Image 1 (spheres, rainbow, N blue to C red):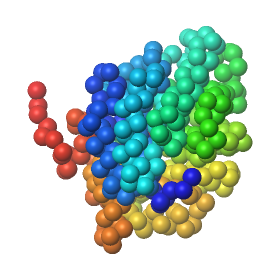
Image 2: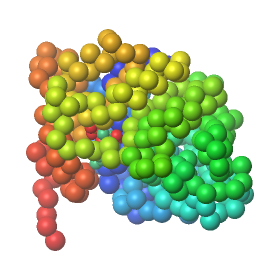
Image 3: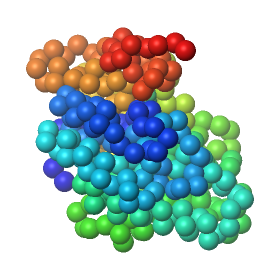
Length: 324
Ligand SMILES: Cc1cc2nc3c(=O)[nH]c(=O)nc-3n(C[C@H](O)[C@H](O)[C@H](O)COP(=O)(O)O)c2cc1C
């Protein structure tokens, strides 16, 4: 797959759909503007693939065929800007231990079906969301997975759900369709996933043919990131991973300046960099940098975007916030 640059827009839940979970014009327009802003690849916000899954407020859903048509409008809009787009497939929250093996298999098949639909909708690929303590990252964590069937126990067995999802997605999509994953390099809880489990799981996925691994962790949206000072929160783990596997590694979390980003690309084997909040504040950030204004991202990492309607930046509101 040809990408026009090395910068991804990391998955960002936009809270723009109604409870139907269908894509609407506002969402299409948002992605159109974002693609026009120069980023090479967009990963959509979290999109639930299982009908019985918990709700994420105003998030997109993709558990049956009626969702395809809206997504086709979205991918067409993005592709017009020579930008690639991946659907972030996810489950929000659901029992880990208290479901039978057959339901785990139904969940795996739901991810595979979503990948099939994503290809029909024109996506270049899908990302499996296994980070930030959404469902799959809980499932692979020894803190929350106490299963005694083939999906629980050793790190290899806890990783089985991810390997089965990858295999199911491959069997339901064509050879040119990409499947990538976003993972926690650390649960940031004692007894949870740490570097060793992360690397083992990532190696298994690489051997099974995953196309890229985006490195994140719990507690991702740290405040107080300052360009050139404390950027790139998960660089140490991503650097080790990139030395360990031959699939491309994408680093996300706290990247704010071209200096830091170029430094990472030039001195490590990490191949791609991913941004979320800087593009909430400045959807045109890449164009700005390309045009020669290379001052760092204006995002101050205040995390107010989590609290606003449609996760807008309080310094760059598209819509007035009305208190009710
Ligand atoms: C408003 C908001 C929504 C987010 N939604 C998602 C999401 O849907 N899926 C996901 O994997 N990460 C999500 N994230 C996390 C980002 O993708 C990213 O990992 C994190 O913000 C750190 O990167 P940054 O410093 O460039 O913002 C979200 C972050 C924000 C601020």
